[in-house]
Image 1 (cartoon, chains in turn blue, orange):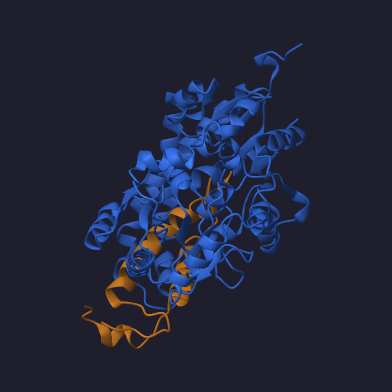
Image 2 (cartoon, rainbow over the protein chains, first blue to last red; image 1 turned 90 degrees about the vertical axis):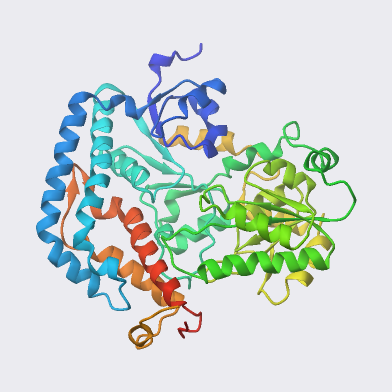
Length: 412
Length: 75
C-alpha cells in the first residue's frame, strides 16, 4: 500500500532547478520543502507538490529576527577599529574602499544579518511543527545554503551536499572557498569529484560516488534535438563546421587569471580559430553572467564578419548542432558536450584544470591546432572514460535513482 | 591609467598574491570575534558574501593598476 503524504518525513531542499530530476523520485519517499522562493509553481508543473520555508516567516518570526540582526550588528560596530586593523594588516595593497571598511561594512552586515536571522527563525518555526529527516543542497558556500546545512546539523540531522559542478581547482590553485564543504555527506557525481574533496580534507567514508543528476536529461533522446533539426532551427544553412564557444563569468570569490583582459583575449583567439577553419561560431553565455557581456560578444562576432550567434539559452540545440566545443577555462560544459557526443577543448586559466587528459587544452598559443585535434577526436572511445570520471551514472543517465536510494539510506 | 604608480610599484603583485590577499582580508574580519546569530557562526556563513565584495574591490583596484601575471605592474 502506498505511503500516505502525512506519514512521510520532510526533506529540506535548496530548490535549485539543477536538481529537478530528483524532485519526483524524492517526493515519493518524503514531503519536500524548498528554501528557494519562486520554484514552487515550476515544481507543480512537474507534478511535484512542495512547501517553501519562506511561508514560515510569520510576523512573530520577523519581529524577533530583525531584533536579533540589530543586536548582532550592535556587537560588530564597537569592534570595527579592531576589524579595520586586521584587514589593513594583511599586507599587499589594500584598496581605499577596503581600507575604510568601517564606513560601510556594518550597514552591509546589517542587510545580510536580517536575511540570515529571518532564515534561522523560519527554520526553527518549520522544525517545531514538522518531522524533518535531513537536508539536501546543491552547493554549500553561499550563505543560505551554508545556514541550512549548519542549522540542520545543529539538530543532529544529516546534511547532504550534491555538488552541482565538479570543481576543477588544482592543488596548487591557492585558497578557495570551494575547496571545503560544511555538509557532513557528499554525493559526488564521479570519482574525480570525490578525489577533489578527499584531497581537500573531507573524510572519504562520508563521500559516495552517485552520478550527477543534472546530466540525466542529456541521456533522454526524446528531449534532445537531432543535428539536422538543430542546425535548421539555428539557421546554419551550409555544411561548414560549427564551433561552440562557452564563455565564462567573473566570480570574485577567487582572484586569478587576467580578469577582463583574459575574457577579451579569449574571444579574440576563438574568432581567429573560427576564421582559420571557416567555421560558424555559436557563442553561449554562462548562466550566471549578468554583466551584459552578450553585447561584447555580439560586437566581436559582427566585427569579425563571422556567421554565428550569441545566446544564453537553447543549449540543447547548440550542442546538437556543434562539431566541437571551446570553453574559457575548464568548464563543466565540456562534460555536457561530451555526453552529447561533442568533443571539447579549453583555453587554460590560472589555477584550474580537468583531472583527465581530456578535454584537450590550449595554452593560448595553439588554439587552432588544438581545435583541429578536437574535431578529429569526435566519436573516439576515450571520451567515454572522461565522462565516466565525472559522471558515474554514465552511460545509463540514471543518477536520480541512485541518489534517491542513497539519500533514503541516510535520511530514514 | 593609474596615477599612483609610485605607491603600487613598490609592492609588486601577481594574481596569486591578490588571491592570497583576498582570503587573508576576508577571513580577518571575523577572526576571534566569536560572532553568532542563533546557532550559526556568522563569520563562516557570510564568508562567501564577504569574499565577493572584498574580491570585487580588490579586482577593481587591480584593474586600475593593470596586474600582469609575472608580478610586474604597468600603466
